Length: 168
Image (cartoon, rainbow, N blue to C red; front, side):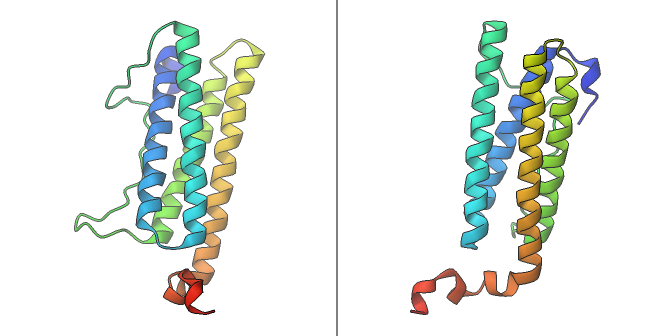
């Protein structure tokens, strides 16, 4: 994540939208790759949350600047997304991925805190402070999932656990 202070509001908003789209894609890809039903539900929730954020920010941008958003392939304010797969094509370890997703959410929260400082009106600052708080909430969800997976990973990947109907 680059220095937000040196960028104008328009570029910061474009980067915010891009980062939300990236996180939505990341969580969707992870959701499809992971078999654990509990972790899958959390990821499904995060996909929807990130989608709401990017749609809200696109609408905010259109209303503020009177134009459609054009998302570049790369900006110097991008938050580095989580790499889910090894070069071999194998899914990386779940704990590693969750750690990286937590990093992503923490960086997103800091991004929004810094973005809030760019605005002079209280209402807009509060919007970005709220988004920062939401990203912290996502971090906390992922941290809980990380702790659960670290403790219960053997059972979470067990076919019997995944398919309860086989038990009863």
